[in-house]
View 1: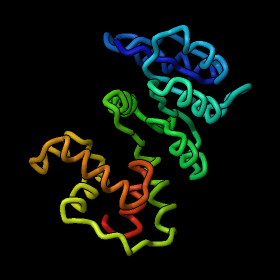
View 2 (view 1 turned 60 degrees about the vertical axis):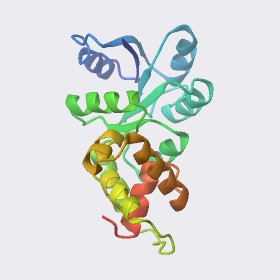
View 3 (view 1 turned 135 degrees about the vertical axis):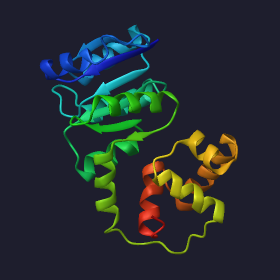
View 4 (view 1 turned 90 degrees about the horizontal axis):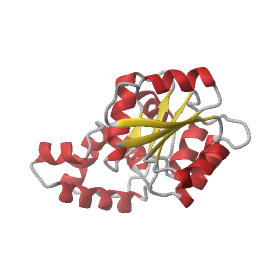
Length: 208
């Protein structure tokens, strides 16, 4: 069973979101909270796997709460579910290490896809969020002195197509371990911190 907390200061939104999980056997909403302070107070008392969290909340917002959760409860997955789609918010939260970032306009199916993805230890960024990345990265300075192998280029291309580790492994007929090794090499070579950084590098260098 996956235990989930919803953190949003709008009661109607919290209740509406909680209704998505009413008939789910594998996911249980164990708390609906109104700010980051309440989340941090609740986490030591409950067995929680995922927090769905808004950015703008009173007392403690989603940014500060995410930073503290990742420090004190690193095993808890955080999916931001917010109306904020500005580059500064997105980049800041990805640097903190949030596991997913969706706009509140997302569909129920995408929300469940994001949950399943982060539970597997991978990151999930909504389609609209990726568009913000692309628009901002296109204007950045291109780095042309980093050389990638043919296989690294193939894997980078598939990462940009939103394929996860197992899907890439199946497509290239290699093991998931090999994919992860190449992914780590890509992060090291490009100086990226996460998948978003790899997407940035790919756009800058016209790999996609």
